[in-house]
Image (cartoon, rainbow, N blue to C red; front, side):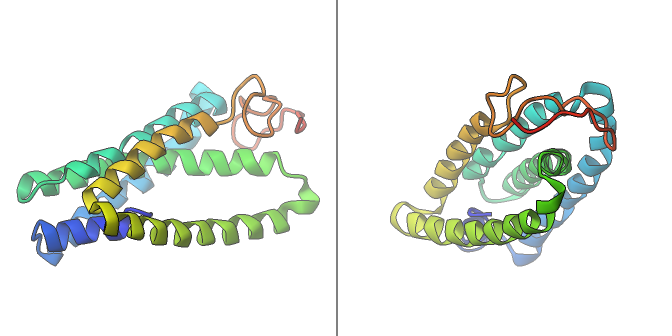
Length: 188
């Protein structure tokens, strides 16, 4: 989200895209979120939760860097649509699986507080990152700020939970259960 306003400046002001093309570039790829969310349960049932988390988590981090290479015209529009489609599809797979993983590892008496905390911190972090990346774009330009965000997103793959308990707060026990099944694992 930190790069969304920067991409608007880059596409609308610097590259001269008409507003309808900018809207099209982000509206069409949203179908990927629906596709990804529909695919997630089947992927978890076939490959296991851990594998889906790692692969979809890594893939969702790979796409944003491509937005730094947007050029004017049809090629630039197609690039944005392809990058956003890939990104949103991977997020559509990853987000529900990761949310289920987190909820499975949260004690039931703390679910409401945990969900509230995720909501508040998610919105606060988004606002802070948009502001910070606006400052960075003011100093280095929108294209450079988008590229830096893309590179930093690649490091988030290192934060994904590990099967052997090396990830944040995980014993690894509940990874391979299909949606709705409990394996009896506890948080380590």
